Every structure is written in C-alpha cells, then in structure tokens.
Length: 226
Length: 256
Ligand code: HEM
Ligand code: SF4
Ligand code: FES
Image (cartoon, rainbow over all chains, first blue to last red):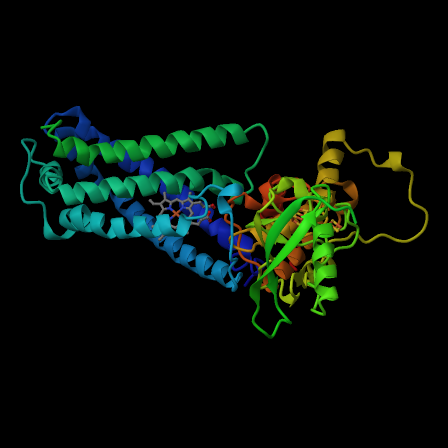
C-alpha cells in the first residue's frame, strides 16, 4: 500500500479505527437523542414527526445513514477482531485474578456490553427503522406526516420491550463511561490541561444520553405523555 | 534466618518446562517473620524442599532492591502482590496475615512463555528494544550538556518514563496481555529528549511492529497497567506513543 504501510493493521491502527468509529457513534447519538427528545414536548408527537420526516427525506441525512451503518459495522467487526486477538494473547488464564484491584469492571467488559448493545440494535432497528423504511407507517398525523410517534406509542405498551430498552440503555451508559474517555486516549488526545474536562464531559454525556433514551419508553408506558 | 510467628499456606504454580502442563501445588511454611521479604519467604520454602529432597521452586530474582525488574510473581491475583508501587522483592510478609493462603502464579501471556515454575521468558521485551529503543551516536567525547537546553518539565517527563525497569507487570495484569505501557515508556524516554529526535518516527514504527509480532494483545485503556506498575509509569506515555505513531504513519514521509 502506498506509503501508509501497515498503518491500520497494526495494534495501534486498529485502535484508531475503534476510536474514530466510536467517536462518530457518540456524535450520532447526540442527534438521535435530540430529535427523539421532541416527544417530551407532549404535543401529540407533531414536532417529533416533523423531525422524523426530515431525517427520512433529507438527502444529506440519507447519505449520512450509509456512513452510519458502515461506521457501526466497522466498529463491531473491529471489536470482534480485537477481542479475539486479545484472548489469544493470554492462552492460559490465571487461577486468581483480582481485576477489581486495578480497573473498573466496565472497562474490562466492553465486548460484553457491546454485544448486549448489538442484540438491542437488532430489536431496535426492527421496531422502528424497518417500519419507517420498508413495511410502512400505518397512519399520518394532523400535519399529514407519517405518524412514527403513533408507532412508538403502540410499541412501548409492551412491558417486555420497555424492559429490554432500559437494560440496553444501562449497557450503553457503561459502554460509554469507559468508551468516551478511552477514545480520546486511543487517539493520543491526552493533555494535562484537558484530561479533566474530557473525563467529566464523558461521564455527563454517558449519563444524560442513556437517561434521556431510557426515559422515552418509560414515559410512554407510564402514560406520562399522551 | 530470623524466625517469626506466621504460618502460611502457599499455592505455587509448578511447571517442568514450556512443553508440559503445570498445576498449582500446596505447600505449608511455618515460623515466617513479618519482616521477611516475599522472596526471602520463598527462600525458606526452597530450603525446606531441598531438605526433603524435592525440587526447589524456580523463580526469577536478581537485585532484590526493586531496580532490576526480574522478580515476576503474580500474587493473589495481582502482579507483585497487594501493595502499590513495589516489586515482589520489596513486598514484605507483614502485608499478609498469619494463616493466609497465598496463590503464586507466573506472568501469563503468549509472549512470555513459562521457562519453569514461576520463571518466564521475557526476551520479547529485549527484541522490542533492539528494534529501535536506542539512539545512534558516534563514539567519542560527549558534548557539553549545556549545548542542548531541555525544559525542566520535559526532562522530568523523560526521566519518569525512563524509570521503567522492564518487569512486565503491565503485560501480566492487562486483560489483553498488552505491552503498550512498557513500549510507550521506552519510546517516550527518547521522544521527549533532543537526542531522540532524529530517529523518533522510525523508532515508533519499528518498535510497535516488533511489539505486534511478539503476540502481545491490543490495549483497551483499562488502566490496570498504570495501577500495577511498580514505577508508576503513566498512561500519558501510551497516548504520546499513539500520537507519534499517527504522525509517523500519516505525516512523516519516512516509511519503515
Ligand atoms: C451506539 C453504539 C456505540 C457507541 C456510541 C460506541 C462507542 C464506543 C467508544 C467511544 C469506544 C472506545 C474506543 C476507544 O477506546 O478507542 C468503544 C469501544 C468498543 N466498543 Fe463500542 N460503541 C457502540 C456500539 C458497540 C457495539 C454494538 C459493540 C459490539 C458488538 C461495541 C463494542 C466495543 C468494543 C469491544 C470496544 C473496545 C473497547 C476498547 O477498545 O476500549 N460497541 N465503543
Ligand atoms: S511499564 Fe511499569 S509494569 Fe511495565 S515493564 Fe515498565 S516498570 Fe514494569
Ligand atoms: S529482584 Fe530486582 S526488582 Fe525485584
């Protein structure tokens, strides 16, 4: 390969890919969470449906959707590759290993947390993305927009689904509690003047995003928004 | 040897060589002084085994004062035992209680094969150093130190990185058996100083390539290495290495 040699096949290069795709997913979640939070306006989903309509029709967003799926697939594929390689690096396990003495459990469980997220993503895409893109949204709202809000209200009547979403958001929170700051460290963006900020923003980001997402099915199920 | 009042049960990994399987074997040691180092306690155990006509436990050690990095023992689930910032030779029996059971295992990593019992082969580290952990200079008189001004902060950071003793605790404790802390310390100690600049970007590429080919895992930033390193080597070094690696691969025109 021209000049770049083994840039992306080396251990650090593979981590760069993890870090970049992870940060990209973090940015995506801000947009996703922001638009979804429109349901809390409690206007029978009118603003939310406008947002959903924009996301489904704007060509830049539609092009971005491909980038998002590619980014997600690369993140998952690379995670799998790294996890398998890392297991091979220690073929004989310790009889006693006191991990909690030196690191956080969620930093050691990124593969597990990610796998839970992956299972959730399959359920979640089937719930909403497949409906809005393929099988069709059955009703329209008073503005004449496809009523994705209506779809959501029906889906979140199911307590099992609500439970699955809440569990997934707990996994997301822990995945990000480690992942956010970890991505900066991986990219080499470590600087004594900024490390504290990165850490704090990471913690707040993880908690706020997962709480907001989890509040959605809870609010609908509990009948807090009409 | 001074006698004391501690009686302990040891579960020690015994393995004949790299080809045979090993197992934890139970031993009792009695009258251990709390002032003994962990290695001295092992000396007592070995004398006991020799007197009984059994094979003593093979373990690495040399300086016994925390500077050579040889004394690799994974004690109760942690490299060099329960204390922070010490090697096994600096660990004292007062860190344990009378009647304790102590499990002692070798470093476990594909890149550190067991030689015998608790001794592992860490020559993978030597090969990483040989790949670029040096500066090339002509022999002759050293030039005047003041001709190369180095900011104090920079000199301190280089010195802190240079404190790495190559013990391998970072690899041993890392869930991925990654050597990133060691390699980044060895890269940083030179990258931070003017003498290291001419080969800076060549060095990071060759040392990382060698690290990868030795079969160490990939860092996931759990921070276990930094927490367990007897010399307090900082994760900052890993970030610096990653930065240098990116510069080397994507900006510098030199390919290795
Ligand atoms: C929206 C979803 C996701 C977001 C926002 C996200 C974000 C991140 C971030 C920021 C990192 C840290 C990268 C680094 O340290 O350089 C990371 C690492 C990781 N992710 Fe994800 N991720 C998501 C989904 C997933 C999924 C679905 C999986 C698995 C199937 C997964 C598995 C992993 C693994 C194994 C790591 C490696 C741990 C590490 O290197 O520190 N992630 N993720
Ligand atoms: S970085 Fe620390 S733990 Fe790793 S080899 Fe050097 S001194 Fe030992
Ligand atoms: S024997 Fe040298 S550091 Fe422990």
